[in-house]
Structures are given as C-alpha cells and as structure tokens.
Length: 154
Ligand code: DQA
Image (tube, rainbow, N blue to C red; front, side, top):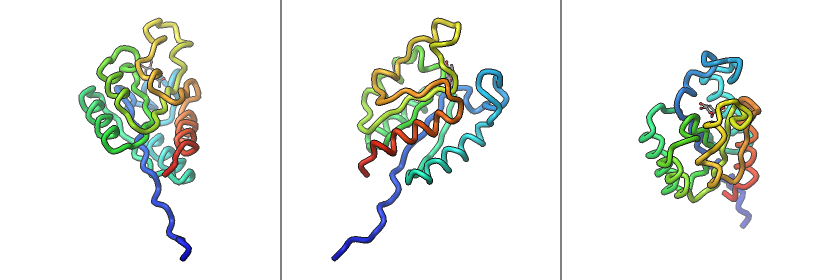
C-alpha cells in the first residue's frame, strides 16, 4: 500500500531577545521600519511556504529565553535565534545553546561586527550555530528559515 499521508509541518522556533519587540520604533535607521508584529506574520508566511510550522516569540527576560531553549533541546526543535544584546555577553544563553539537539541558526538584523561598538563583535551563539545570517534586515529571517528547511529531515 502506498503511504500518501502528508508529513506534518516541522515546528521551528524563532526566538527573539531583548528590545526586539520594539522593532519599527527602535532605531529604524539601524533596524528598519518593519514592526515586530509584521516580522511575526512574515516568518509565519515564509515558514508555511517552506513547509515549516513557525512559532515566533520575543522576551526581554533572560531566564525565559533559557527556559525556551531548554524546552527546544528536550523536544529536538530547531531554533532560529536573534539573542539581541545577550548575543554578546550571556553565558547562560551560551550554555543553553550548547544543549540544543536540532539545528540552530543565528540571525541579526544588522551586522554587529560592522558596528562601531566593539562589544558587539563577539557572539556566544555562533559556536553552536550551523549558520549565521546578519546584516540583511528582516529578510535574514527568511534566509535562516531556508537553512532550517534545507537541513530538515522531518
Ligand atoms: C541585533 C544586534 C545586537 O547587537 C543588538 O544588541 C540587538 C539586535 C540585530 O538584530 O542586529 O538588539 O541582534
């Protein structure tokens, strides 16, 4: 008998750190005018085009982010992560990323390494990521989801 049942869409978490809920209002010359609500809709649409069930979240609370990453590790869920400022100094985020069991893609709207503040030039996430997408604005999230879709085995 041929199995014609469609595969359920693979769940992907798109996790955003501090201040990213203010997209559109926050330094638009750096981060653009797309709002966070727009970003959520765009990611969901790109995900559905790619056969992924995308869940987008944002928190300003580091412990909440660690809890989300720990749950993703336990569930084997791929993660697209913009850790925002935590990228540059949070060893709690480093340790949580180290435990992930499915692909992790790091994304940034700006290119932190091209910015003048030298503290932005290092990332605790990169060591654990299969890819880093930066400096491409909100379109970088689409590219990050494409990386997950390309690597997804179901
Ligand atoms: C950011 C870059 C970080 O340096 C900054 O702290 C952010 C946003 C980005 O998406 O460009 O909050 O991660």
